[in-house]
Amino acid sequence: MKLEEIFKICIEEGIKEDPRGKAKIDKILKKRNEAYKKMEKEDKEFFDKEMLWNPFDDSRILVDDKRNIKNVMVGIDIETPEILLANELNKNGKNIDSVWAHHPEGIALIGLDKVMALQIDVLVKAGVSINQAEAIMQGRIKEVSEALSPQNSERVEQASKLLGINFLNTHTPADNHVHKYLTELFEKKKPETLKDIIKILKEIPEYKEGMKQKIGPMIFAGNEDSSVGKIYVDMTGGTESNKEAYKKLAEKGVGTIVGMHVGKEMKQEAEKQNMNIVIAGHIPSDNLGMNLLLDKVEKKTKLNIIEMSGFKRIKRK
Ligand SMILES: [Fe+2]
Ligand SMILES: [Fe+2]
Image (cartoon, rainbow, N blue to C red; front, side):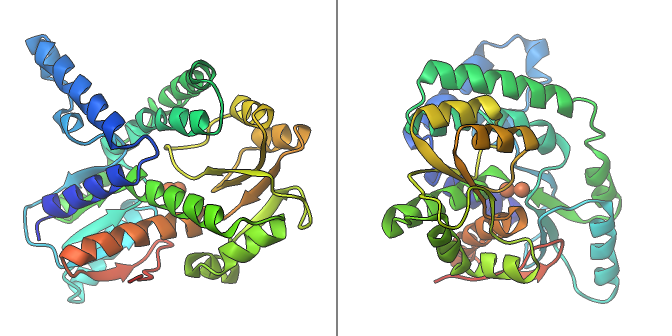
């Protein structure tokens, strides 16, 4: 299968699992297409046309020589050392057709702020008003956008081009899978205490691996016997929101946040609001998302996956 076809499967599957729902994403894409049509010719020149069909601005094919893809090297973070590693392995006959990252690079990295809007919908589902959710996220999105602007974003992409190694990343499509998976799991298992949450997480192979590496589930706020109350799964939408979001969630009756990572200020706010935080683990959660996504891809095309940069392939039926 070509890289473009593999990527298309990831985008479609990412949309299916998106907390905004397919109808809302269709609307977003329709709006983008209409705006593009009305755009002046000189603006069209700079418009990223990928945005017309792919709603995930943090996921892109960055290098593609259009070959058939069989051997892929998958990692959570891919930077120039990992590209050099792929090149070394190719010298030893590994024939890596593409390197596949979870975290974004290139224009996908610069697009990270754009996917954060999906957190508005997650906040609304938890009971926060749309206006408050928009106000909270718009401020945070601007902050992330400004922080990304000085990045030397093309560095890794250029390295892979120089070495003739294909390169793609899937960020929010994978994180959407974790978000949905854990949301449904907690709805089904109804944990009562934080200890129950940890127990549920520890039954998932990616978190078991996380435990072995000492980066697995941890209680950041609250204790094992704390009551769970209403759970807010904070697993997708680019990057962290902010303490304002946590304040509003507490007001709306959320008792426990289950997330990938959390900033100091957010943790302090949760404690102030008597809200618990369970950190499922960043890399184990990213592994879970990538594995769930790869299961879908591998239903359509069998890949030979070389694990690296924190990624371990665990297949599900
Ligand atoms: Fe992630
Ligand atoms: Fe991540």
